[in-house]
Length: 169
Ligand SMILES: [Zn+2]
Image (cartoon, rainbow, N blue to C red; front, top):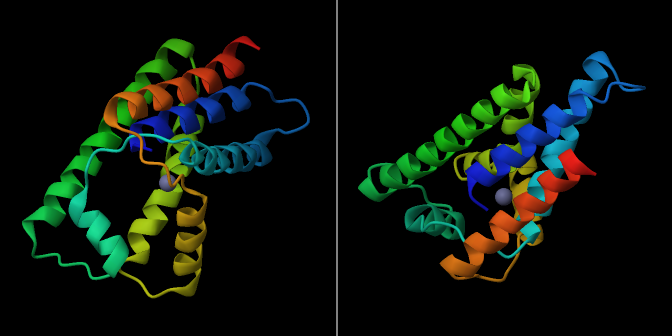
């Protein structure tokens, strides 16, 4: 799923959890928010969805041979950067109107995209932990390739359902 989807869901989930308080307060609540936002990433990845083409990233994920001199690599990185920027802009804008604390938005947004960041790092590091996580991340990710129309619709629907449960149930 695109980063924007993960950032919005992770950030707003954390924001909503921050208002519950109750038995989970203070630092424990931040850990709780981080864990739930992280879990939301894997759950969203299970939904068949559309992703913009990042050909060079796909090649690296299959061959594990990053070629940083390639223009295609930097072009893909720019696309992902723009995606994250859009995601955080929407998140902070909604957080402002919903009066959600910025700490929860940042925690939720970052943990919402942590699995993708770890998979990115795994291309550059032989670290066993990163490689194991990457395998888990890929195994949990949907194998169904949805076309752009259907894939954007399923993505929007998944976000819509989560936010509806979050704010109206
Ligand atoms: Zn992912």
